[in-house]
Length: 310
Image (cartoon, rainbow, N blue to C red; front, side, top):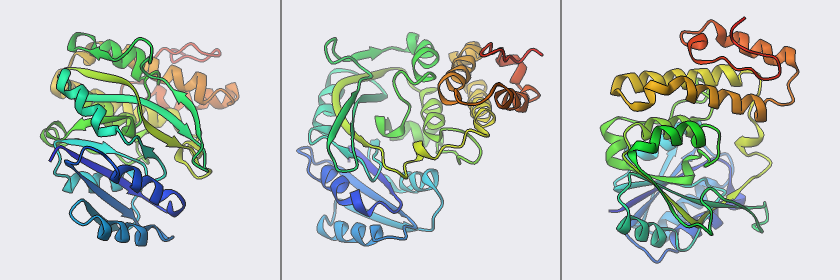
């Protein structure tokens, strides 16, 4: 089997059928769909069971107690059989040429991670703005092993290419060999970024398609609208420490320039995600990581008068 599509689900009955139909109606057929109902309290679980009955042999349903997004995705990974892992959020959709375009790319370029462009949709399904990570006019982009560390520090860490798990596909053999799983968001900020960074420590090349293959819906309850700013920098530090320890374990090139990566990551969030915080509140967050294991070693962030070298 070529692909496993993992769809974590929690109370998305309003959009779930639209999502599932987009995944089921593909010209390429060598894939499975894994629905993980994470303790939904609405009719999402019933919709999942009906869909699995209609698409018997294609779809598997897991019903579990609510454990959060990371837990649901990990449950899907535990049973996935495909060579490649695809994540789709249950209120989003994919293009009807999703697998077809990926197969074309894989036949021409040998990479261990493939990403694609995104398009927003509103709560009514109307197509919105494009999210361009790879320019449609200049074509696809291939990133080789020599450029990966630079790519992580200058593009991935500052969100120029996004970092959501649903924005790319992952090779199952790498995930299994290195036991990569999503980390609980109570410990780190941005579980998608943490997963993708850990995965990329074992990648030789990345291929970015310029095709619009994923439709991303922001709803009133979306995680992006519920992120707390109060502990963001400490959770970012925890993410950095987690990845750094993995870098040391596997002696990866990113280890040599981790300070640059971390400064880019934390500087981006201070400038864009915490821009409405007062200097006093921002300095309080910086204080929370000044005395951590690597805080002063990595970061000397001079933004709005704040830095680590007090």
